[in-house]
Length: 398
Image 1 (cartoon, rainbow, N blue to C red):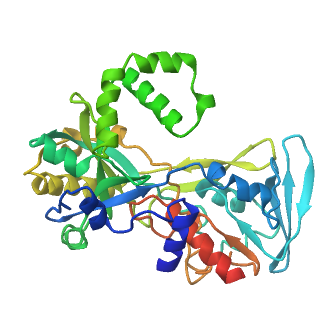
Image 2 (cartoon, rainbow, N blue to C red):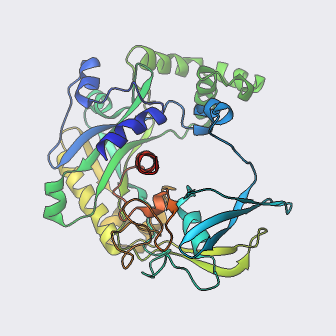
Image 3 (cartoon, rainbow, N blue to C red):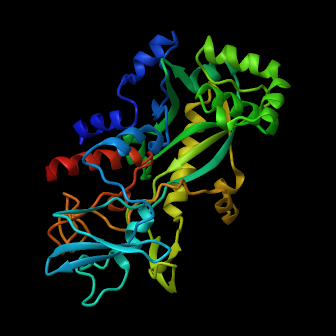
């Protein structure tokens, strides 16, 4: 997958991003600090996270792309082991059938399972394993500990977001494989979450961000007046951003260890259907997302490891409910909107829904290009892998 990950960077607007973490730190004249049992690394942020904006010209002008809006897929038409058509409908009742040699479903992680769970005469040939909709996964996000920097300058030099040559880099930590094996944990990592409770400052930052990105239509006169009232803070922010190329955190900002935890590949979470139908006639879903004790123990062990590893730079204050095993900690856990699993990839139709080329079992010409095919989720954002799989599938079909 390495070559496809590299090609995916261009689709994300990251073709010119610096690949080497060490070079980013060298450019800042700062050390690339590492910690015992934890690996420090940088994630790269898309300059334009809205792909509709990023690729609008290609979508509108490319001669090989034909785009139909408001055409929701409602039925895959099959004959024998081949798909022969896709019936689509609008909310106003207009229908059309699209026909092609191959069909690729690039649906959301939840919608993928919902569409292919819809009942059909003769059953679901792609669900011989009985795993369709099963083992759903998301990344568990939570503030697992409060942070008190012991050496503020060193701490912020190590963990504040970086802005260099048009790209944003976010310092992160992840558990080393040897520590993961020693503690029998899942994959897990973290960022430092800087939570500024000043709503007014947040609004001012949002206005500046829109102006810098040229989104003038999203800025009102009230926004400008409000921003002008916070010029001292913006001067500090501008100096930190332009000169030091880092994000600015006010002294009163609260800092947390924000953990991102993998879920078990055989997660008990599931997507099933109810007996209620949506306006297009498709059955709605019943969604059951669960967090297991092993996942909570992974978070617990990670926080304790971070507490020891970062002792020289910050005081780590673990959440008491987490350490005690109180169910109250679950109220602090969020999903990441990283919907994965439910149509897992497997070399056999006895253990999966799609094969290793993303072909839907039971059909010869239908493919699923979605995070729903992930057999496991790691802890990193899934979009980069979905794009890499899309490029791999494109090569396979060309």
